[in-house]
Each structure stands twice: as C-alpha cells, then as structure tokens.
Length: 245
Image (cartoon, rainbow, N blue to C red; front, side):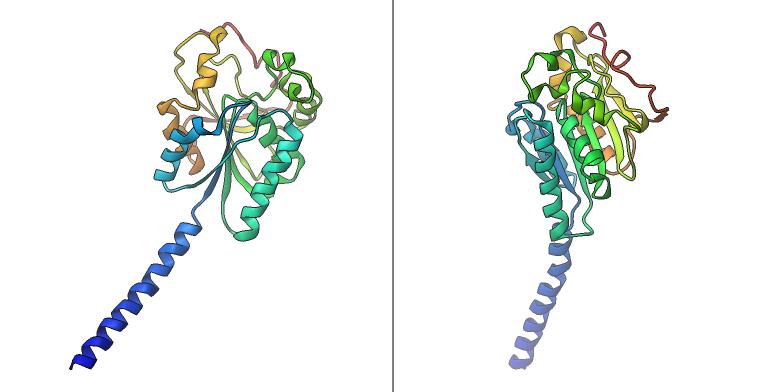
C-alpha cells in the first residue's frame, strides 16, 4: 500500500510537471512588443508604460538607442526583430515608438522588409512628415527635418505598406499630427498645454491615459478611428501646427 501511495504521488508529480510545460511555453510565446525611444530619451522613462504592457500579458523589450542616425537604428531594430523571429518564427512582434523613433521604425518596416515580420506599429506623437526642431540638429540626426532625404524616401508612395497595421496616438495639442496616407488608426487624448510648449508631445510616454490606447492597439483594436487617406494627401504643411490649443 505504501508503495502504491508513493507511485501515486510520483505520478501526480509527473503530471504536475507535464501540465506546467504548456504554461511555460505559453509564456515564451507571448506577443513581443519592442518599445523604441525617441531622440535621446533615456530608456528608463518608458518603464511605467512597459510595466503596464507586461501586466497586460505582453513580453516587452525596451530598445534604447540615441536617435541620431535613423537608418543605422532601423538596422538595429531589424536585428532585434530578426533575432526574435529566428528563436520563434510564429511569434507575433509589434513595435511601439515615440516621437522621432517613428522614423527609424517606419524605415525598417518600409525600406528594410519589416512588413513581413511586424504585426503592428504603434506610434506616440510620431514625427512622420518632419518637425521644425529637427532642422537644428547636425546630420545624420537631422532626419526629422522636413524635406530630409530619409523622410522624402519614406513618404514617397503609400506610407503604410501592409500587412503591418499602423496606429497613431497623439495629444490634441501636439504640434505634429502624426498622420500618414494609406490605412491608419488615429487616436487622440486631450492636451494639457498649447502646442508651442511641446509638453504634451514629450509627455505621451508617461501619460497614463495613453496606456489603454496602446494596449488596445497592440491587440488589433483601434481605440480611435480607422482612416484611409489617399496617397499624397498628407504633407508637412498640413501635418504641423505650432498654434494648436
């Protein structure tokens, strides 16, 4: 009887180990979200957002790059995604970028073949058609300047190549609209200060109101409105307004 009891315990333990395997595998296969910072933004400032995304069930990798060379950093972003897909080919990977980080993430998606590997691109206050402040930086960090070579390349043809889904989240008083032509989900939170202060543009990374919008976007649910703008309808002139209030 004692032997039978030990066998039962051993069998139960074995079953416990076996039943734990799927949960471990599921944890390893959670959707990966790469959070990519804006210009010279310390990676640590995104940790409140990262923590909320982890609590929502995503695996989060914080990619902290200085933002001085958009093409180079797009290559580093590609390497990060390639590594994740090599380890788990069927794993879903999405990117959350902020401010000028949108340039590198879109360059990777559009110019370096990222459309096949990136499920969703979620952008906070994206510099999509240029920013006046981007023009004061030396090359190659001046890629955010309207009319720069990299922006001209990105904005030639449809801005939002599929199958990647594109989501934009911005403050209503952000001087940059973040709009792209093609299919894009656009969501907005009410701004705190006028556009000229540029507070809301930077604060998006910390704004707790943004968290559920990012989470919804990463799950494929547009928290705003899907818009399909004709090619060429978005320009620098209609993207930037330093007088938004």
